[in-house]
Image 1 (cartoon, rainbow, N blue to C red):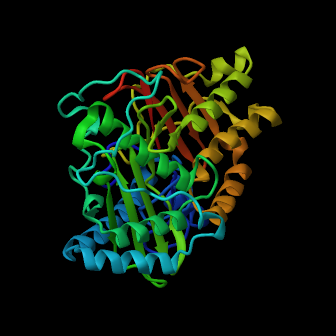
Image 2: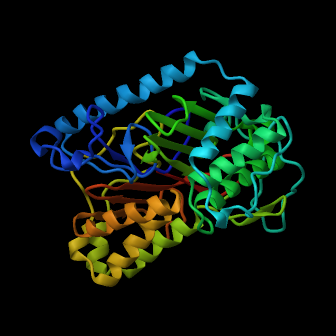
Length: 399
C-alpha cells in the first residue's frame, strides 16, 4: 500500500508476466487459489483479497510488487507540477467518463488551504474531542505519500479531480463517490474539532503511476488519512481496484459543512446482521480464538494472510445467511464503478460456498477490538474497531 495510514481492501491479482488472471493459469504453478483483493494496485484485476498456498502465493506477490514498484519509479522520475497535474486529471476524465447519474451529485468541496475545515463545530451529541496525541494514529497524513497535495490544487484542478473520482467509483448512496465525499468531510470535522492542521481535505494526495492512456498500464491513486483508492487500468479497462483502505473517525453520524458523515456504518451493520443470523452453534464455529486490535493486511503488511482459512464456511450457511454475507461483501464492491462492481459481485456470489466468515469480540461489531473477516477464493475483507485518536469512542479500519 502506498502511503496509506489505514485501509479497506479488495484485491484480485493477475499474473504480472502475462496479464492473465491467476485462476486461469496452472494451479501447480500458482497455488490452489487465485490471490485476490478488493481495490487495487499490483496489476490486479477487480476484486477483494484472497488467500492461497504460502509458497505459491509468494511467487505471485513478487511479480505484482515488481510491477507496482516500476510504476512508482516511473511516477517519481517525472516531477509533478500544477500544469501537468491538470493535464493528467483532464485526460483521466476523458478516459473514465462518469455516468450521467453522477453528474449532478455533490462535489469534493475545498476546505481551508492548510487542510483545516471551514467551520463545522461539534453538533449536539457529538463525541468529545481533544488534541491529537503527538504522532498518534497517522494524523500526520502528509507523511510518506506520493503525488500532488490537494491543498496546492487550483479551482480548475479540483473540478477535474472531482469528475475523475466520480468516474472511477460507484454511484450508490454511502458507497463509492458518496463515501469518499463523506471521508473528506470527516477529516475536515477532525480538523475543526481537536485535530488541527494535520487533518482535513487539504492533506490528501493525487498521483498517477504511468501516463493516463487508453493503451498500456497506468494507475490512479487518491488518498490520505483513512483513505486509499488505487485503480489500475490496462488498455482502457479496469485491471484492479486494490489496495483499498477505508477508515473513519468519528464513527457516529455528524454533519460537516452540510455533508452528513456516516461512511462505514453500512459495513458495520451488514456484518452485525450476518452474526445475528447465526445459530449458537454457527457463532461458535465462526468465532476466532484470537483478539485482533487491527487489520492483518495493514500498511506494510500486504501479504500477511493466514495460512489456513478460519470461521464458518459458506456451504454450512442457509440461503438467507449466504445472502447476508453477499450483502456485506457488496458494501465494498460498490465502491468500484457500477459496471465493474456487477461483474465482481457475480464472481464472489459464485464462490460463496467456499468463502469463510469469521469474527472476534462482540456480536454487535461496535466495541473496541471487535473484528470481522471474509475470506474466499477471490475475496479478503477485514473490519476492525479501534480506539479513537482525536475523538472519544471507537472507529473502524477496513480493507
